[in-house]
Image 1 (cartoon, rainbow, N blue to C red):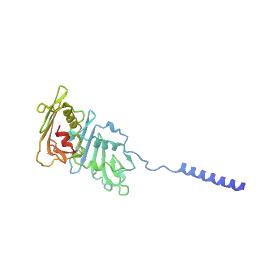
Image 2 (cartoon, helix red, strand yellow):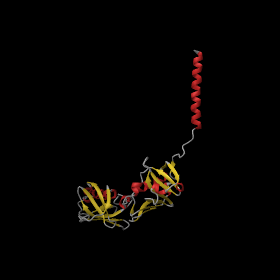
Image 3 (tube, rainbow, N blue to C red):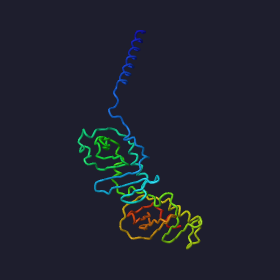
Image 4 (cartoon, rainbow, N blue to C red):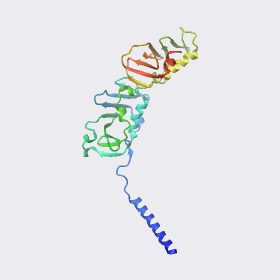
Length: 274
């Protein structure tokens, strides 16, 4: 009995030793997962997107605010900008040297999209059919990354515009609506033509405009105007909208940008009627 116990202990010890040997001598993965770059997203000041047969998109950071500068000049959508900046830290699952491969195999000759963040260029190719990941070339290295950003880079300019009707931190001076006119005088909102409206009601209307956010932005299509809105800021700037639809969803047009904003249900009540 004692002999059997000793034999079992020897066998167990041998198995443990063999397992430790295999763990310690196994080679690490040939291509460990690492970030695509070591660049800090907050350091980026400019972004450019080049696509075949589509307008080039340009974005610039000014005082921590991202603006689209081409093909339109307008406040950019922060979520879209952040998605592009996060590319810098997305995982790289595999890496190949471009000089050892035919770039056409990866749809990189030429690339479908070229994204440039400051001086750093990312060339987007096709996807790996087995994993569904996207080939991206940086310099002489082809990386395999998650395919979340590429579909966004193919979108029209309106996709990259901020959904807010009025930029954040804007101070309003006047709100001119089809049936009402509001002015900010002596630290309070007033409506001389409709003095029965209380100050609190006017303040709520102004707050609604400052918080107004579209659910969709699209290219402007011909439609009759149902009225005009003019928003004047305290530094003298003017933002003009055409009312294209009131119900069930409010649709407002910026003819200077050739775009339209589709607002949530109930927006006509909140923005046009004190």
